Image (cartoon, rainbow, N blue to C red):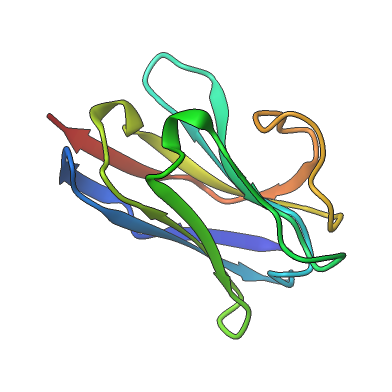
Length: 129
């Protein structure tokens, strides 16, 4: 019913850039809280960034380790959420997941997976030193 499909991952050298895309179907990007999570080798799933929905002006929150390097955006015409990742570091290596909630607001800790009802399949990002 609701599908989230990530694309844009791959392998880059440290300092490089990637833009992840999350194309949604059966779901309206811009109406609800959406987020990116990641899970690195030997690590649990952690929140990367999130953006609130249409209840008010969009509010974005970023994990401290990616602030100034990653940027969330969305294209409502394409119904797609993006994560622009610049100045990538080896520690950014992980499987990245797009997540979508059923509410417009984003609440709770950034790494809390509880608010998100829908998930993409995940996409690999590998950053070499």
